[in-house]
Length: 189
Ligand SMILES: *[C@@H]1O[C@H](CO)[C@@H](O)[C@H](O)[C@H]1NC(C)=O
Ligand SMILES: *[C@@H]1O[C@H](CO)[C@@H](O)[C@H](O)[C@H]1NC(C)=O
Image (tube, rainbow, N blue to C red):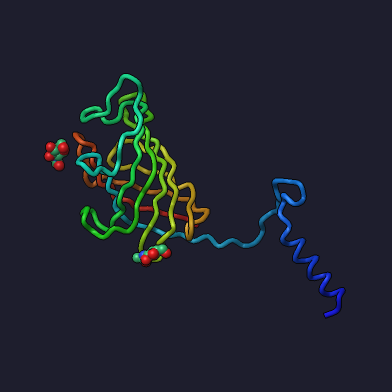
């Protein structure tokens, strides 16, 4: 290779690798993305176990409005905030195969009697073809037996995901708040 060719290659390498910051900006030029993008659709079926009772709960209250007490019979006063780490399993039985976990925060966001949560969580799968990938849920989550929550993103194989999860409570104990939710997720990624 002649010196000119090597010089030209170096120029290409440096230009390609130049980060915006080097050029004194914090952003790159914007480009119209006209590559054909293949969007895949994946459907997932699993059960989510949200356990408030017992000495090893999967959801714990971390904040509550001044003057209220989060306790049996008053689990979701307006403003209560819970952190959760719920198992995701193949079947409705809590002892069935664990395939992931949903970790996040939910808050009681209705001032009325129509109990509503804001559900914000990362549902990560820990087995099978989507091991290590996750879907991000951020949604209104009314406290009814059947509802739909929005999937707004994802990681790994679910990067840039959009979709929804139809949730159906197969078990719900109104006294202690324990719930098992059947989840049918449809994800475009
Ligand atoms: C899932 O991925 C983790 C991290 O790469 C690995 O340690 C684990 O063995 C995998 N589990 C399964 C069931 O494939
Ligand atoms: C619901 O929870 C209460 C309080 O923990 C318990 O006494 C009751 O047996 C539970 N009901 C069912 C159907 O599991």
